[in-house]
Length: 258
Image (cartoon, rainbow, N blue to C red; front, side):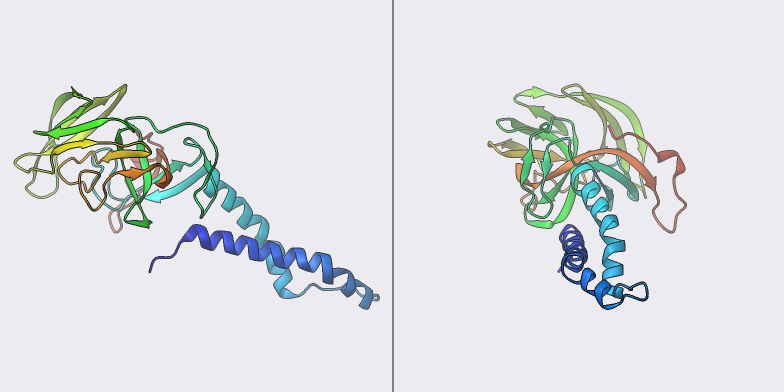
């Protein structure tokens, strides 16, 4: 069973605030009345609660409503994102949501085709996935012969050349344009991936990895279409790359995610 860090953070913040608040309202004045000759000392529990509460509150607000860090664990978004990339996800681009409940309380913006999106896996909401959004509600998505079609129109695609992949894998690097978003994609020569035609209903999104032949995404039943309520935020920037025990890739620090 995986731990829900957001829930733990909310509980810890609430507990510290409750202990500190109850002591200030009910017990602090009584201690001062009893101990008149010397400076009264607060209980250790109250001191810890008072110290940690503002820190936890700041972390909770930033993580829930502004930015949240994630680490890329797989190669499904190569070449855009590499294993070991640490990224920031903008939590307010698509609207503010309450932590744990994930209920949207303020409309700010909507996901757009081409965005790199972090979302909670529909089959297991405790697991976060990151893919590129290619289909909006009402769209018809077709993927055939390694080409992407949206509403019957083929997305512009340009072969850039060979890509140096791990092992003896022969891969081709390409540039794809979805609406006005240009991004890199990776195609493995001689390897087939799931093809088909998919219709996106209202309230759902269709996601695909940039590593098209090695991505478990909306084409597969284990992921499927992503409900709007499962969207976490938009991936915006890389702040570190370190696939231990390899050395960090310093040149990736600060890179914008396209």
